[in-house]
Amino acid sequence: MKKILTVFFLRMICMAAVISLTSCATWDPNKEQKEADQVEITIEQFMQQDPGLKVFFDQAYGYAVFPTVGKGAYIVGGSYGTGMVYEKRNLIGYASIVEASVGLQIGGQGFSEIIFFKDQPTLDYFKGGNYEFSAQASAVAVTLGVAARAEYNDGVAVFILPKGGLMADLSIGGQKFTFEPR
Image (cartoon, rainbow, N blue to C red):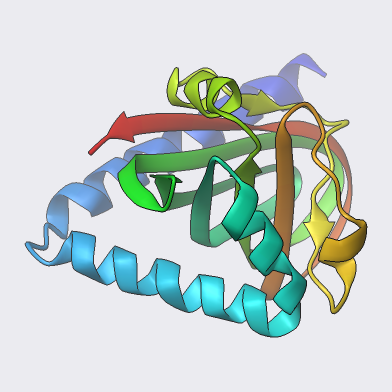
């Protein structure tokens, strides 16, 4: 078990280094507009799958949209994605999502994720930068009519939309989020 954890942490460090080097090497002055365009496309895709999500957009105090989260694993896994955070429909900052997991898992997949915050205290807690979902937290896969049955859990409602890939996964892990003000 100790060897598996060591390999896991080495892989996570390597993945973080690659992400850091890639982001530095690809500076783009139009990055914010491109990301905003991707967020709009992602919201449209979610709404096409279930127009009932409009209620969440209209009534939520805020939301975070992650257009693409990539996940890969071979026993030890990880995922990463970036997105934008809105308060009362106004862009207030940027967020990243990182997940680490260990267990019986292999493959890779991509998905989009939207997190709705029911009220200001929940969004403020997220903005504090220490927000995470445990292994017990569940996201709702978006299909027609799912929004009508979805509810907030501890002030958040999470929806995902698979983009592609194939993954067999029986693991333990959790998502951790960071927030950077605009």
